[in-house]
Length: 307
Ligand code: FDA
Image 1 (tube, rainbow, N blue to C red):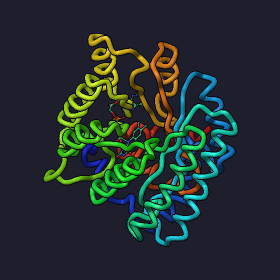
Image 2: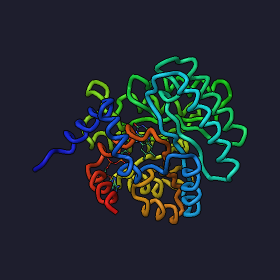
Image 3: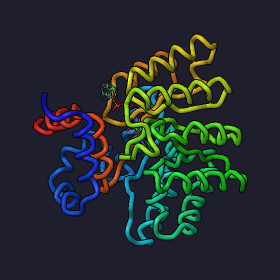
């Protein structure tokens, strides 16, 4: 047997933050990453979104960026998101946006970060748009939840977040946030987290995701299931069917470049399907996480890069 999946994932996640690797990958890996990224520019992302919409698939657009080092970078990400939200409305794209708190300055200045995210949410509200705050690694879990709660308390309800089924705390968070009508995307979780706070076994993560999804769907909360895993997707389909839950009372979300044919098929069956479409030049950490999740992604990328 070769290198185990667990070890592979740990290895890739541990090199993901290294500056030299980042620089090298930024120089040579762009071609490889293009399978998962819509392009460098907003225009390219909007073109991909229009094409997906034609196939019956909704989108969430993500301008790539995270872990910034200067606050001015956060301001420019904010400005890009404001423009993005405007372009979505102007072009009649069926979609919303996803952003990351560290991209908006969370680590550097929490107050400025709140202001930046608030500006995007306010802009989106003008056109009935929605903003999803992605969930990053555990040092930022509470802060991210606090931001979403505070926005809702201010009356800005067109914003939701993500809960990671690998975290023990997520079941409780899901119950509390749902009481406040905060919309959630449920995912397994993409970062390396210790056993003190997170399930390590895939079976436990899947069981927890199903448990939380079932609970939210039973309460008629509109939940997004972010996964490519048939053990999750099929379970959700069966759960909905056997509990009389309509196909449009929840949505499936998958990443651009993964199972595209299946996304289209689910949409054609009447499910709401949303594709997470990243764009921009800061693709390296996103790309590395995709490779860490599934070794086969690496081979698919390598294969495609020779075409
Ligand atoms: P995983 O990669 O664990 O694969 C399990 C099984 O699914 C495979 O063995 C295979 O059977 C099937 N499968 C997977 N990919 C396939 C493919 N390409 N073709 C065929 N079969 C395939 N994470 C996070 O921490 N914070 C966040 O905010 C988000 N946001 C987010 C949004 C969206 C829309 C998605 C889909 C995911 C995220 N994630 C995330 C990432 C998430 O936490 C998780 O790391 C990945 O989705 C990988 O887990 P999966 O359940 O998709 O399958």
